[in-house]
Image (cartoon, rainbow, N blue to C red; front, side, top):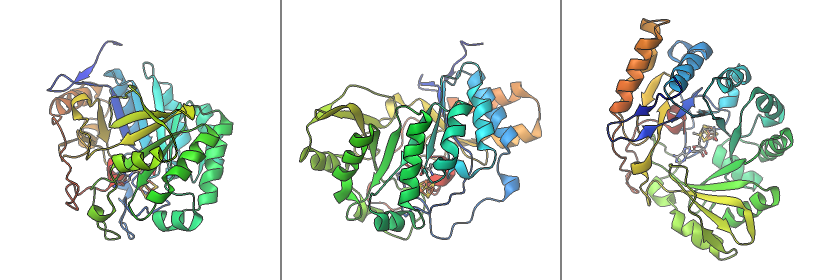
Amino acid sequence: MADRILVDGFDRKIDYLRMSVTDRCDFRCVYCMAENMQFLPRQRILGLEELYLLAERFVALGTRKIRLTGGEPLVRNGIVELCRRIAALPGLRELCMTSNGSQLVRLAGPLFHAGLSRLNISLDSLDPQRFRQLTRSGDLAAVIAGIDAARRAGFRHIKLNCVVLKGRNDAEVNDLVRFAIDRGLDLAFIEEMPLGTISEHRRGETFCASDEVRARIAERYTLVESTESTQGPSRYWRLAEAPDIRLGFISPHSHNFCGSCNRVRLTVEGRLLLCLGNEHAADLKAVLRAHPGDSERLERAIIEAVRAKPWRHDFQVNDDVQVLRFMNMTGG
Ligand code: SAM
Ligand code: SF4
């Protein structure tokens, strides 16, 4: 059983699943959501047991890493127990989570004890007012307290995620690097992706390429390119001044990483998305609900869907919307 693997039509081994456990969030980040979002009604989203059953099938089919995301995964009731059950699946090597950090003061300890192995925490600004503007409702002090709670709880290799928007937070890049160095955290700078219609800004105007971010960092630090890779969109660098931390640059526009893609995404509606930049999907919730308890049928649906994974995405910088889904729907 341990030798089963999922392979797509281009012979890529798919062993990484990102699962969205909710489309809801306590923030409304300007690049991620519209101000007045309509969230999904309860009957359309997967229950906790359904999320678990899907995770179990993926792990049985060779998935080695699962990342729980959303929306904000920590606003989903029962999340700690779900983590505990998924973390215990035999064969799974890593259970990770991406969070905005707002609930970590309360939940970092329980999550660590439940078996969550890694945390990525989003942090776009160290200025309380700008943080509030970018998240529309976030409290910076609570998030920083959450980051520190995660460190105290025992999490290692915490990574901060920062979406860089020109004219908004790009001048803060080196302050964020300093913050990461002081706390011994990895830090990834993300290029904004054209997911979902937003009206707060035109994405073409705020786009900030990873090369520009690196140029700013190079004004203050010595960047050393690293050969490390996670088969994903990140490229890693280290700083001569702080060699223990990694700086990642996630550049879907300026760096195409699809050839080594090893991941698929499950939305909280139970759609398996085969590529972030394409609409190819399979409705696993329909299979699960039409044939309860039939794990063979579910496995067949997963295997068939993965075979249809497209070769690559093709984001353009200046087109505002190419994919109608919002990031909170896809599990970013
Ligand atoms: N709520 C959690 C958080 O913010 O970390 C998890 C979900 S969020 C959708 C996952 C990541 O996607 C965050 O780091 C967020 O900054 C990033 N993100 C959201 N919308 C994006 C966009 N349009 N382009 C690039 N990154 C985006
Ligand atoms: Fe919420 Fe994360 Fe989207 Fe921000 S990026 S609105 S925290 S889901």
